[in-house]
Image (cartoon, rainbow, N blue to C red; front, top):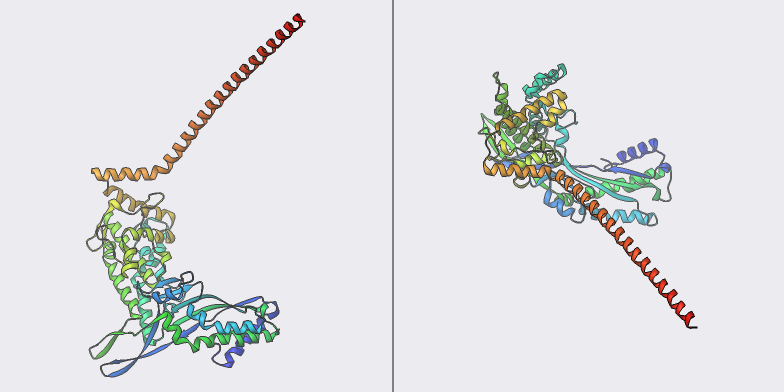
Length: 484
């Protein structure tokens, strides 16, 4: 880490000097990553066993730290309502306070000019980087199970069939679940899953006075970067207590055939969820492996089951709510389970995967067009041709339409009418508006005609009055002359 010894700081200064002309740089931004390692000793059956302890962000503590700022994005760990990673556009209040003296000192040294500006801040564990080394290498985000079990892929071209064979091989290797399970095992074996704090700061180079060239980079490194790291090292315990919870990993220990087995809460929770979700999709995989032709409802049940399990795996690992299929999962009460009960569950009155029952009459639809929604749609569309996608979605829609085609009760008829009214409301509004405008135009034309007629009559009356007045005047004059 920069700042722990003079060599690392000197290396950073030399690197900056060799690559950049300090006088030509207006601002430089650093991500000052600090990795915190905690070693815990847990007494198990009379002797000490060293284990790695981890700090995980606490949602409530982080909310307090950002009380007067825009709330940061939180990424729950394994659906937890407490443990998380976070990413904020500002820094926690504790970090702002601890760096105040340093920022004031830099300002005094440079005639009250602002030198350091605090930017974003992240808290996360290194475990995710160990399992998800890159986006392309992480199987959890590739819809492997959905791609391997798409029945309509056999009806596509050669490329579609090659794609399915690739996914089928990965599924036989137990991906994407295996990658998470083995990644956790490796991390536990190496005892390497630390907590990272990553403040991002900008240094206003143009405001630094009295130095230039290499001297400017030396000032930036030794007086700013190193000192910012030093603030963190000297106050690491205070920062941790204000933002994270320290998790003791041992929650279960027993001996099996003479071997001592220890179950760790973290990162073991990832492995537990991966195994549970693998078991969750097993009934769907069993159906899709059958050689006989599946019925429409069996195909709908099996493909939606495996796609839901795969999407839950991704959300469990990432905690990224922006990729949650919100409208679909809200309909089945999965969103409510995740964010209010820390456990994803489906409303059994709408879909019961255990009993293989689905309420097709109320299947979720898109808000605007009213089309049926399927959680497998995104994966099928991404991996396969438009032909395969159209056939797969068409087959699923056909199942729902055929199963719901029955004599409607009075209540169902009224609900259907309400839905028709909702969908046609916009069109009706436009029709009424146009008719209203036509009526107004006609009324205005009639009013204009009436006004014109009234004005013509008034002009004629006024003209007649003027003529009569002129006649009377002439007659009066004649009388005067005759008398004279």
